[in-house]
Image 1 (cartoon, rainbow, N blue to C red):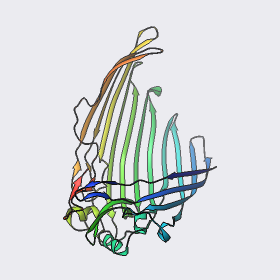
Image 2 (cartoon, rainbow, N blue to C red):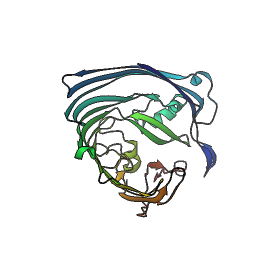
Image 3 (tube, rainbow, N blue to C red):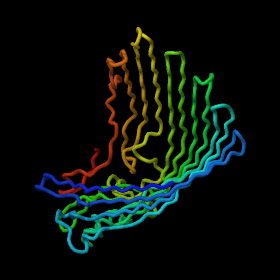
Length: 365
């Protein structure tokens, strides 16, 4: 088969009041993407129970970024207004072997590779050489273009059906390698007394991901259904830029670019699990009553590559109870019955006031 995608965005900016008055702190860039792709798959049954699957996808990501307004708030003219264009080509294979060791129960192993296309940092194309030099003093590998990133995935698992179809479990073990990962950085840069905040993306090396995922469903009775899940996600940053790294988060926190290597990836919990129960029963002809409980536990997750702080673990319980007819449903419900006040997520940022009036301070958002 084949498919074609075309998308566009007019871009956005940041403009507002600051301690020094109205300030324009981000460029406007129009982005256009065209992605034609072809894909194919072949399957071979060695026996009734053993199947080999080979799939592949080749695509061309044609990226175009047109600078409209520069980081100084002025309309871009001349050569700087020429669109930035690049085509990122990728081949994404997926190979798996499945063994149905019992009816509706399968052992499998697979390898797959995926990509995220590269792109541009258009603000660098319209910046002065002095600004670029100041930026690269903080992030040495900053450039107008950044490359696509790649994820290689090795996975083995078992999908089993039990108790005459009333129960089903899925267990997966995986080991992934993240290469040339795209990481966004917000960098405060001061040139000749004028401050600006650059949002740029760079390819920052390699990380290893490995873990276990488990899911289970059980139709305990004709009226009660139970389900649960568990995930363990171990990650480690193996390299991060040049030498000991060029971690902008680390520089903001510790005043040095090293410090990310050996840490786990941010914004993702190492452990997470959930449990839910769903009960329904006939109240009278055409009307059922029902109740449901959902509990989710999410482990702590780092806010940044420097590992400076984290969002704590959280417990969340939701419940609902009601009646359901052919045309009308009425229910009472409660969310966050555990009164969980832990932030859902937090990110490292640069304080919007002190990046203008030095010294620059970090913040959490």
